[in-house]
Image (tube, rainbow, N blue to C red):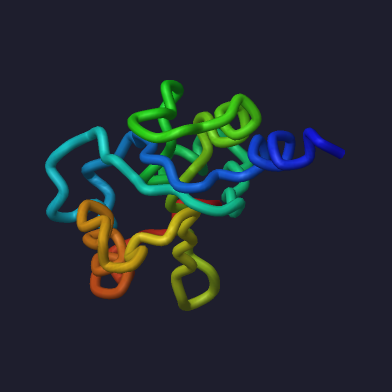
Length: 133
């Protein structure tokens, strides 16, 4: 019972800055110039990896790097869980586009580096082509 708080803390990502690789050729990355992006992750939502490598290559414009940590505390549990997972997945579905975020790009309007991703999701979604056969 006495270890509950410590054990529970291992399962919570309280707010850490993680390093992510960006595909600068993707429409959602328009206006970003650095291949390494820094993302504020908080909570327990994690996107599932895209099924095949070819689909992942084209539909995952932002993905956590192998090093993961840039700043803040990331427990071993979370380090393994978020290593190489997608942070943004963009896929065509019917006549529309699904854009999924594994983080909040507008968190309290505090972390300005990722706000461009949501703006591009709104205004550049029509430029995303179908990448599945």
